[in-house]
Length: 239
Image 1: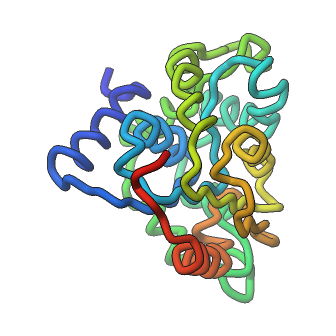
Image 2: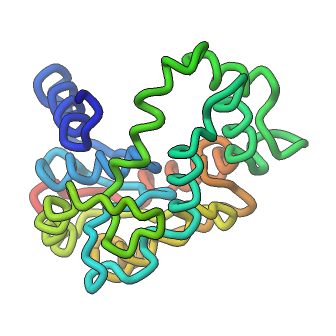
């Protein structure tokens, strides 16, 4: 099975380190970008200078550590929607993105255009192309009380073992979560409470932006990122 959490992390590490050999990285992590990217960062912290987290999580399945509702009802609803075939059918992916990629950066309508919707649908001309998309929600580590009845423990222990890296991470971490994201928009609290790098940073709330913050909250996100880089010099000799 190609679609495993660890395998996707490994592909990222191979590209970033073995092929690109990147250093002094400022990275923006959203959704699965954070689920994968935070594991990459925790394994190679000296490669990174700044983290910007937006609508993402680093799940552990440890309710005592992360809280009962770290993985939200909105995520579980999404997981069940995909599992029950919600993405199958003509233009279902594009229509879903049009609902979720919303906010002021999408223009006067607050939604992506029909042309953008078609672009999101284009990689999936037939249901046979949906295998990875359908598998992804099932890979997110979830605790035993997962209301879908399909808890996913694989990966949770690995992330929990890596969390001490972030509990000792003092390089700048900016939180830019959307106020209209029902899936992961409320998950900023764990980094805010446990990661020293979030202290005294210019955190923002992306106003009226949906889950896909780079679409609906794009202008706010770019402004926050530029300010973050310009006002937060880094010292790579420290975590």
